[in-house]
Image (cartoon, rainbow, N blue to C red):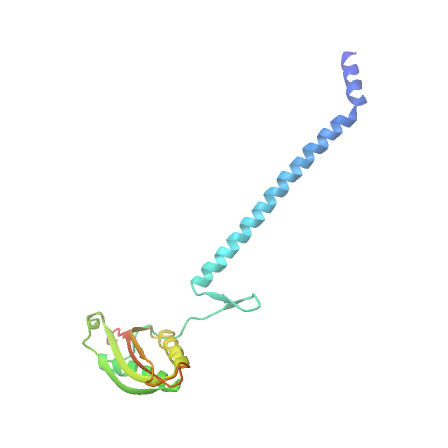
Length: 186
C-alpha cells in the first residue's frame, strides 16, 4: 500500500508538476528558437559574403532596384593585335587618337616608343600630346583603361590653359603615355 499511497499523493498535487513541465517546455522552445534565429542569421551572412565575392570577381553586379544582373567581361584579346610590333604600335596610337577626337579633343603630337624600358617585356608605349576639356579627360582615362586590350596609363601630365579663369573654362593640355602588351606574332 505504500506505493499506492505515494501514487495517490503525487496525483493529488498535479499543479506543481504541470508548472514544472510547462517551464521545461518553454525553456526548450526558447533554446530551439534561439538556435533557429542564429542559424538564419549565419545563412544571411554567408549569402551576403557570397554576393560580395561574386561582385569582386566581376561575375555580377546589383542593379538599382536590388536584383542581380549578369555582366559579360569585355570582348577581345587582352594583348595588342598586330603581325609586327610596329603594327601593334600603330593600332595603339589609332585607339588613343580616336578616343581623344571622339571626346572633343585634338591630338597635337604623338610618338610610338618601341624601345622603351618595358619593351623587353613586350610592351608598346604611345606618348600623345593633346588638348581636351576636363570632363573629356575623365572619360578619356576611363575609355583607355576599360575594355580590351588591357592598356595602362603610365604617365599623365595636365596643364591648365594659359589665362584661364578660376571657372576652369578652356581645354587642358595633356601629355599622356599609354602602354599595352604585344603578345608577338601568332
